[in-house]
Length: 494
Image (cartoon, rainbow, N blue to C red; front, side, top):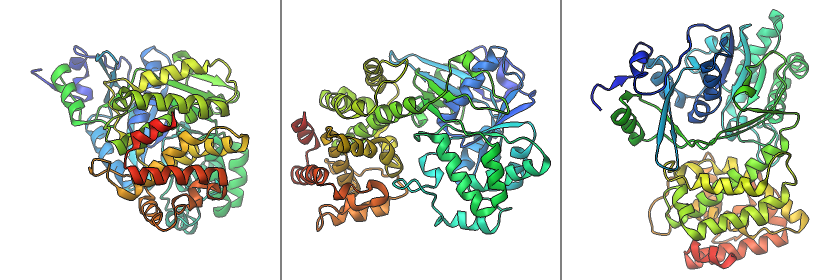
């Protein structure tokens, strides 16, 4: 398309001739959500929900101020700053239709790595009502097996010695909350939007553990004054590709250096615990419930675990994307059987949810040919994901005598994946995991000790001591290494 327009505030009116743009004044606002971790998911979820409210003429006083605490956040910080913090959300429908919309709910972005004082001051401001988080499972700094805080982290050790020089989310939260307490201001609500079961409870436990080691009086105040609602969030949001940027420019006339792509489906279930106020998110479809636990567990054990099942098995076979996996009848059948026979039995009844319909919907969402979610993205940081998504289900089925073979094959595949670092066609795998080195060493050691991989207790707990599990796992692993054929092994289990 000729006359491509650079996305920024000055060009909004002209861009509005091509695609929807904010209809609200972005310079006003007296209440803030400070959000740590401005990635694609946040921009497709919380920021989108607030944008919808503001488009409808409500929540006019609310804005989002983004925060980056990692060096890796500098890129998105620079892009959004150059675009006046505007970005395009591109909804990709299964029929191929793309619906782009400019989102304006983020109005500022501060980097804690270069100006920690501005971040602390922003959180400590009276106008800040909520601090929300999408920092990934690994950002919570806990041992995935024990659930306890990791004090061995050198950044944590630095913060305990230097409370006024924060590095991690806990250092910044503690510093800001201390200022609010000292100023006589009410605490902000801390709202986790990460894929962790009981994510608010986990955020509370980790922050309190950190604060107790740093300042017991502050910890006591946080325990009494800060609310940590649990929430369940859901929207598939693949990594933005150069092709997405080109499509937006060529087909819609908008030059956006970092748009976000997502599926049409969106869901958010939250406990209504916001003593310092919140936007009226229920007006745009958010569910507020007394206990989000059953919904969290459903999503983690079905959607997130389902993604990992397809991701790891698909990576070994050579499928590049999740939709390519689902288009393969064997993979689709394997996934559905895992969901029905191993994941569903540990869930129980969930109010207002038909699990059969939910699982049917998952398969349809995974099959969306326009999302093309890469298996490498789904497999990234598996060491932070699988203990909560998949391994927990194995533990529960072992306790009740339920089926474990479908999930166990995925763990055998993870061992092979970590060991060989290539798929079955000899092509290198893109492995992104904070524990990549340990996983590789343990997987390599299975040549001498077949249980070496699952003896990583921080991930697998006591699975290596369970005879039923080890018998199943060692058989699966041996067959996989012998045949080098994941599909043959998958077929044999159905």
